[in-house]
Figure 1 (cartoon, rainbow, N blue to C red):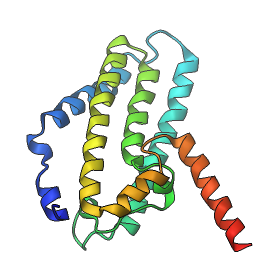
Figure 2 (cartoon, helix red, strand yellow):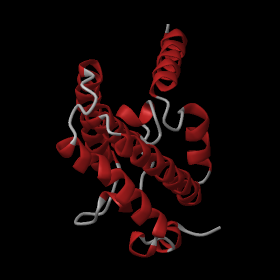
Figure 3 (spheres, rainbow, N blue to C red):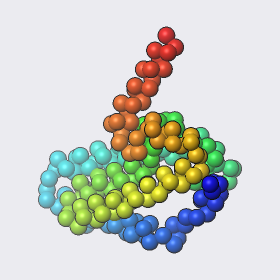
Figure 4 (cartoon, rainbow, N blue to C red):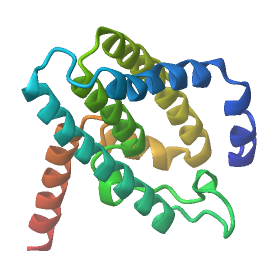
Length: 179
């Protein structure tokens, strides 16, 4: 089995066509929200988009803070060099909150722009982005081994609702054991 350093060195976004493809596709809704805001004048979708945008930013910030606080990255290193499996905070609800947050951010922009090109770009970009999530999981299994496999059994990949239900169930079981 590869060690964590070897797994990290095997991937470089600089030479990854998947990264460039989803980056371009997911950037397009950002431009289109400025060019074609509320294209079909569906105000309800715009309001839903703003709510989703705020939620996505909160998820991204919570994930980043938890990762920095508990990830154990060496001083001066990026959080991608984490040495500890983070499974607390928002990571106790979903395994990839930052990825989920970015996807929700793009969908919020799609709702706000309502342009057909934004919809196509957001959906295709998110599908490719999701492939990167799967690759990240493979690297995490290599890096953290059985601990990550157990984490995968406890916490859903990106389903926030199921994650909350599972977290509440785990907490209820823990409180019953203490009582």
